Length: 146
Image (cartoon, rainbow, N blue to C red; front, side, top):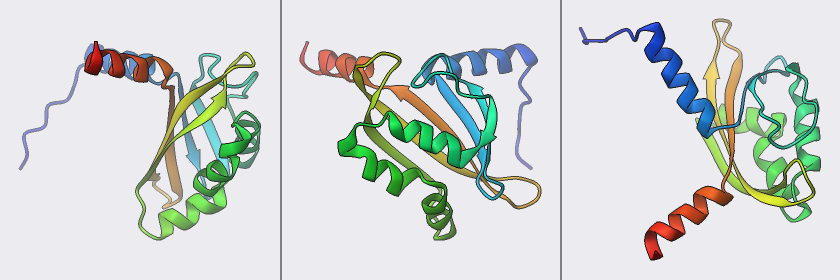
């Protein structure tokens, strides 16, 4: 039997605060049912994202903000149809760094990472986390060359 420690509510709160600080957009999606639930948004990429709705709709809304040079890659990787196919083939997670518009008109490098999960009904679900990489990349370059 493994020795598992159950974290306190304060430790869980600290954990979630740290994750939310790093990833300003977090959502859970049920791809089987074509639904999503937004956990955190922080005015990250697009205006007025409903806290829940259809995955296909939020995908189309997000696609508009992806630079035209990356829209084909974004669709190939993150459309519901292609995600379901990839997960059925055994893929457990997908990661990409793409150029997307922020709240203003400027493009920024954004990482998108989706991780496959399932629910108690066996539906294909995923967690999606996004973050702006401009500051992360700048810090990495400074650390290597500064």
